[in-house]
Image (cartoon, rainbow, N blue to C red; front, side, top):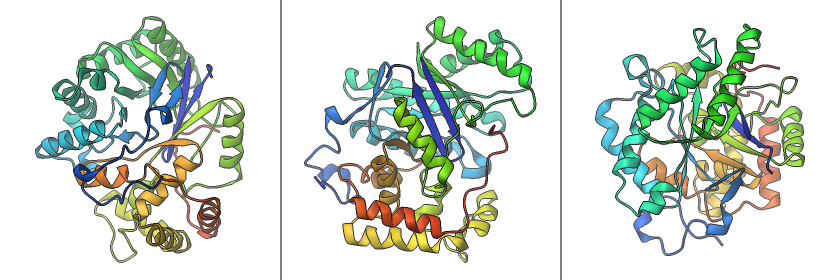
Length: 351
């Protein structure tokens, strides 16, 4: 059995089972060596996944990420590029997609898998980790099982890799949570998923973790140590802090929409961290996002940065095949602690 937990900046997966190759901005057609070797895949219970996965929150979300259906062909090329370069872990959720596009991320993932033109073995090796929303009308185990079946239908696949409860209801509806837990067990026992898990759970209830350079603190590092001792694998989502750690934005150059308001509060305090990221990126002939993602890999997590274009996928893939030195890791962590503004806490996360 697998337990996964997540926060807005990270997701962890807990299991009861227990050479510098590239300059990232280059086109990947010119690659001569693999981004990672087969033996570098990460064992996650019954699953074996790439050292980095890709997140698909933006695939259908108009409010935060400006999705339009005209982007689908670019998203498919992005998916193909990722899979052709060894990425086999894709994170999604049944709530990804706004309004009438709810579930669009799952639909697109399923479509892209079916239409992938590469070897059948590569297609069969793809692992989808999806999350089921703890909507207030999902009150019984059977309703969560039905949610899982709906996701399978949207993706048109026979089995999900990792099925997860998207958030805990302990803060506002504790009885509902017990039923949802039973629903996770039921979907696992019915063979609908290979592993199950939970998301946004705190240390007092299970394990809490936010794992990115924007959320370093004693709690997070203590939890990382606990997870290591228990054979828990952490999956870090939003390792670039919704884009704050890309180096693209400044107090005078903010993204549109809701992200702009959040960024305006946090970015002014991130200069120490961003300066260190730029310094290391220049020295290593990498980019700022690659350095931030590589930090997550070096700390023993599986980052799943979101992608919505071929260019972003190419850049993120450049985080593989090399490792930061111990001194560079310490420099980044010291700079992160100097930065006074951190990511806002998730209201759905339990303590």
